[in-house]
Length: 150
Image 1 (tube, helix red, strand yellow):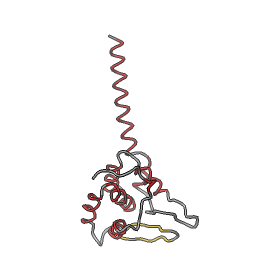
Image 2: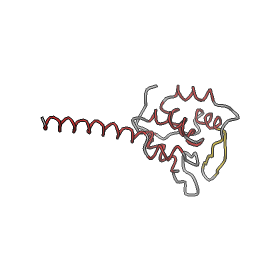
Image 3: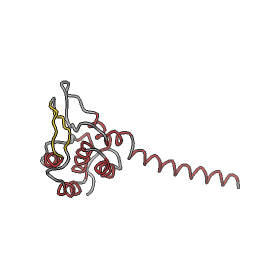
Image 4: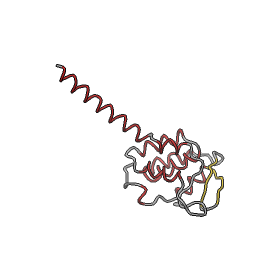
């Protein structure tokens, strides 16, 4: 009887631990940092052409099995720069969802702090979305693990 209870408890903790680990992966440190990132930057930035911290976190989310949901959450709960990363992720992973959001964006809406190369600027989120849709911000192949379904 004690052995059966011990086995049941062990299985329960194993299942609960696995579910907890899945939650941590999808809402982990990369997602948390990206939700409050100060600059939207894809490609080399600054004099050294370094990859921004935001892009590194974006790449971590792109390979997450829960990436689509992570980008949805990021769009809803993140700052304007995070919304730009979320739109880029959704454009890559779920183009139809990207276009649903895109169609609702206002041209007088939120501003995004952007860095391209050595130049920092502020642009409207709608403008960033247009540039994403037009291919100005491209996710390199190594940034994600392949095509996802819509």
